[in-house]
Image (cartoon, rainbow, N blue to C red; front, side, top):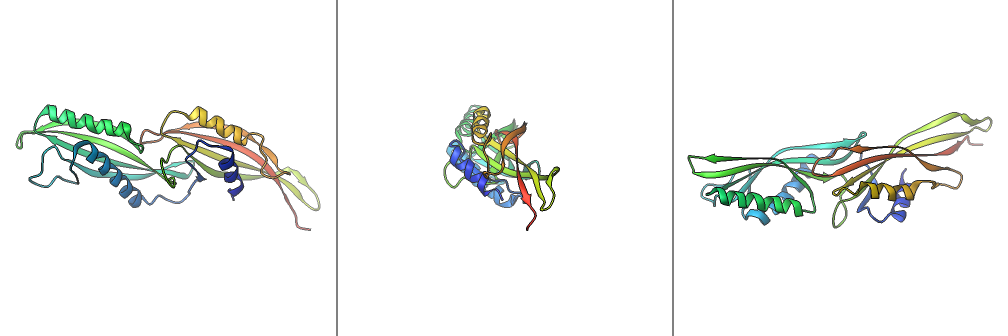
Length: 250
């Protein structure tokens, strides 16, 4: 249904890594959680070395890290899924406070440099007197895109949703009936940097005044609003509309 519109966006924009119809089905959170777990493990290994799921086995080096999956929930905008928010608690132990701070800083550096949509939500330091270990528990969240890119970065992404089609009784002509039908579309922009203004302008340049078919009325802007997203992502949803005609068979 959206093929003509998607083709237009592919041809008229260059900034988006993903341009796709927004999926309406529920997220496969198990699959998305597995993808986020693999990405988190790679990130932690680059920061502190050995990484284990759930718990560190007995006898391992105390500066190794463990991670535990807390939740995986689909994130929707206007009734369509745009990503899955996967939350973990990462625990790092060290023999000294200085070593703990070094490990925590290394993780924060890897998060800042990551191409994935990941953010640190919270961190709490503590001390284990029995084992004489310093530790930090970090709550981290990954945003797994509903429609990932085929290669490279997943961001920025543009997901397109057909909001509604509305018939205009005043625009109908009698026998044979030829009726005007208004169409509204939502364009959801997801980005890992705050460049929404530039991306919205590129979308506007691709759509404003464009006609899907020669007999259609051109696109015009309706409304737009910011979207709150996890994982350090920025989001915006713009609505545009156009109209076409439906005809009674003769």
